[in-house]
Length: 258
Image 1 (cartoon, rainbow, N blue to C red):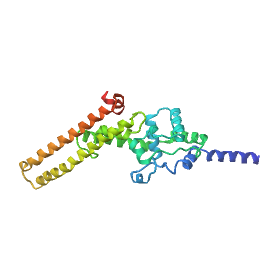
Image 2 (image 1 turned 90 degrees about the horizontal axis):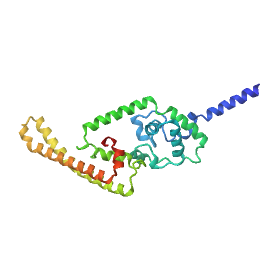
Image 3 (image 1 turned 90 degrees about the vertical axis):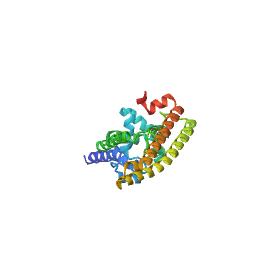
Image 4 (image 1 turned 180 degrees about the horizontal axis):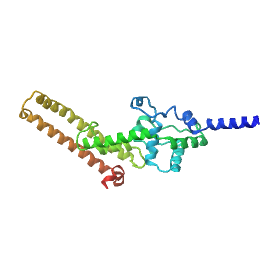
C-alpha cells in the first residue's frame, strides 16, 4: 500500500513538474515577461511580454489548432516574415532564436496549451483596447495630411508596422524605393516644423502681450503657407507610396479604401 501511495505521489509530482505553467516559467520567462506589463517595465524588456505575444497572435490567428500549429512552427523555425507583431517591434527585439534542442515537442505542446488558455489576460486586453481607442482619436486630431509628431503620414506608419510581413510581401526593390520616399518626407516636414515653431511662438507671444491681430498678420500667412507645403509633401508621399505598391498591397494596408 505504501509503495502504491509513493508511486502515485511521484507521478503527481512529475506531472506538476511537466505542467505548462511550470515549463513556461522554466523555458520562456527569462525573455518573455509573464507579468502584466506596465510602462515603467518597458525599458527592461528583451522580448515582448507573453500577454502582448498572445494578444497579437490571437488578433490574426483564429482557432486553438491553428494557434498551436503556428507556435509549433515559429518556435522551431522562426522567421521575420512569420511574425504577428508589428515589424517595428521585431526590429526592436529581433527575431526569436530557434528553440530546437532547448525544448522538446512534448514540452512545447504543454507550453502552447497553457499560453493559449492563459494569455492575454483580461486586464491587459482592456488596457490595450483603451490605448488603441486613444490612438484612433489622436489619429483624428493629427490628420495624415498635416504635420504630426513623427513627421509621417498614416500610410507610412502602416508600412513601418508591416514592413517585413509576408502577407504584405514587399520586394527588395520596393523597400529601397519606399525608404527614399520616407527619407524625403521626413526631411521635408522637419525643415518646415522648425520654421513653423518659430512663427507660432511669435504669434503666441504677441497674443500674450495683448498686441493686435493685425500685428501678426505676416506670421499667420507664413504659418498657413508652411502648413500647405507640409500637406503637399504628405500628399506626394502617399501618391509615391501607392505608385510603388501593388493594388493588393494597398488593399492589405488600407482595406477601407476598397
